[in-house]
Image 1 (cartoon, rainbow, N blue to C red):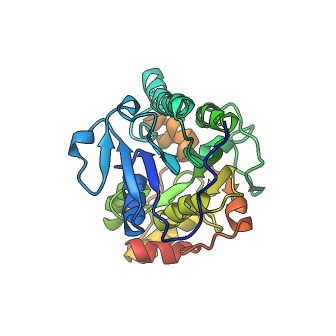
Image 2: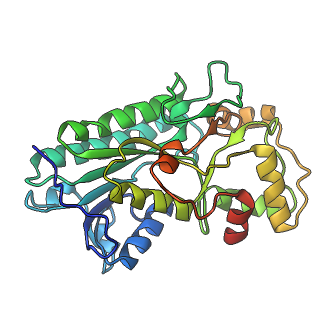
Length: 313
């Protein structure tokens, strides 16, 4: 079946949009922006009863009629990847929370009489893995680079493979490979600020690992860009054009807070405390660039780290 091709890029066109993960750190900001533009939003949530107008909520996709029509579906649901040490049970929970929700959306698309014009499904820069030897590299990475055998990469590869089933149904599909998202009231900074405000912050490990970051407003902007630009599909990196090393990030955050950053966190401590999670998420990093976003005309609000931190902090 063909998808709905009537979606137009005009700002004042009201759209019906279905979102999973809409109450999270990224999803809540996205909903606020969409409401500003007068779009109609339905959230798929286990706590649908707590969702207040003008938002609507459903606990299960089965509650939606196959007559329901959505111009766009945005899939941001998933167990936080860095909240708990990666035991075998936790890894399965992280994987299932993403795969199960995404597959449920695919099954819903199959029964819907009118398909959405675009499906934007979450992923992460973890797709690109940690490198063959776990070392860092200065090679620039764009959306064409492959993954590896690390847990982060395998997770994203499986998640994306499920989402790409939407393409077979004639739905334009974007895979949002998100970097370290910076914003007020959550995300990576919420864990870092208390330590840095006390003057106890410092580089992690060697400090040479790359930290591809993005301001939350720009990640929301890229999602809206994906909705409006009908020629954008496949993987798109949700990162700033100017990634920095952990050492540079640490220094910049200390300067914004006017605090010293003399207390490094040695790699051996990271490995002891966090195991594989620490090795993949904190000690590894690649120089990932938003090539597709830039080539398709997206203009970043915050392309420099100091500007982003000043806005947030």
